[in-house]
Length: 141
Image (cartoon, rainbow, N blue to C red):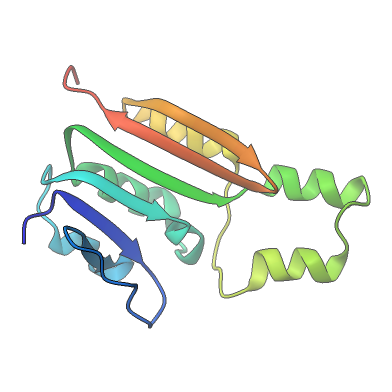
């Protein structure tokens, strides 16, 4: 199977199989050839990695020109705001942050990383303490 569409996962359970999708565990991202993927769905996998910045750079290197990257994660800034404003209590924060996760980022930091990697953000959303980005690796790099 080619690497046109790749979805990353982190749990020990293999995700549901969809035709035309190659599923790769996050720890095996190096097994993908550079610039070989048209679409990579990262989901919230970076929240389960200690070296999230380095892994994001590796993931981006696997993306073809004109390929797209979909990524989401917990936004620490929103969580802190919701704690201070009383919208989240300690058990809710613990559930959001410590359910097997090893790291967390912010909407702004992730956006900056994507832009520094010369990706064009084509969709960005911040909802309920989570950020969502779709970015494109432009041909004119």
